[in-house]
Amino acid sequence: LAKSSIVCYNFPDNVLFPGEEQQPRPKSGLKGISDLTLAECGTLIAALTDKSKHGLHFVVKPDLHDALYYSRSPVIYGAPPDPESKHSFAKRMYANLKCDCNGAARKSSAAATRLKRK
Image 1: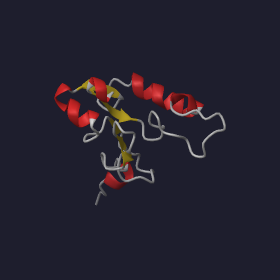
Image 2 (image 1 turned 45 degrees about the vertical axis):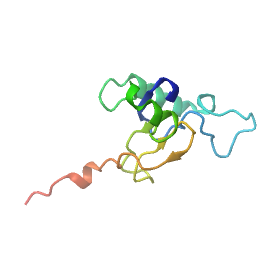
Image 3 (image 1 turned 60 degrees about the horizontal axis):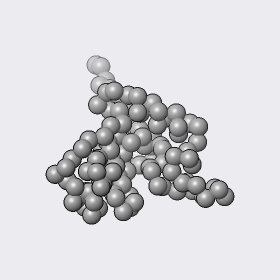
Image 4 (image 1 turned 180 degrees about the vertical axis):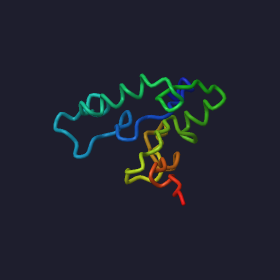
């Protein structure tokens, strides 16, 4: 992605990022999409077919080429975690395969945002 100045947005929160290893690592030594469970594959397909602004999408950013290539800017931005998630912020991945959890904030709960009527 970085070599082509492409940035991925809204990668599903509960799916392994490309190149990320599942823990514990399976004996086959595989990683990435071939390591996904059937449920994770379904989540990834749903994100790819979601045409809303919240769906998984890719954007070409030629002005960010060097920042992407030299891992100063993330190439993959995870979707905001669900309210029930243990993570407060979305995961991000850089070209050097390092990840952090400094992305978008967790989605707010519908119950927490509901106003009480008097």
